[in-house]
Length: 217
Image (cartoon, rainbow, N blue to C red):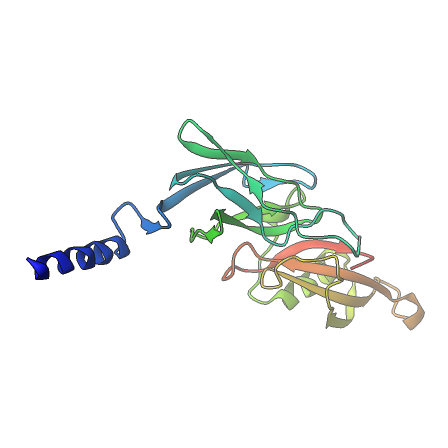
């Protein structure tokens, strides 16, 4: 009888540590494979999208747009905080904040202090027509295309540029360059113009396209 009493607790520990078909058991919270839907998946600047998450059984659920900040051009800008979602009709729902900068932001989920492993999902904050622009395997080719096609100019110099402190966007998805070019019919050095060009891609293995060009980084 003594041996049977000792074996029972051991068996309980082993079973509770194994993942179930519905998901992993962590701190009495069952986390299944989540299904996440954004509406819309592409928004304009200062526009908002809604999120619905199902397949997660927990006491609470929070969402974060990684790298999204609150104030454009402000050196004191900070990452937008986690947003608490509300359980409605079996799904966790909420309205995402509006990032201050255009770009691609990964959607992160957590319940309590536990991050949830979910398929890569991104909110895209684009100007109209961004998704229809040509794509390239190298972000440098985006800049060359912009000078040649948008400005009908001759490229003089191109250099990767460090991001300002207020820009917390994922550097794996966003690349900033400074470029100098000669406008058509004006080859003189004094006529050269400069611009900051940002290339973006919609996933970590995606192709690059033009996000925006501006006179300031």
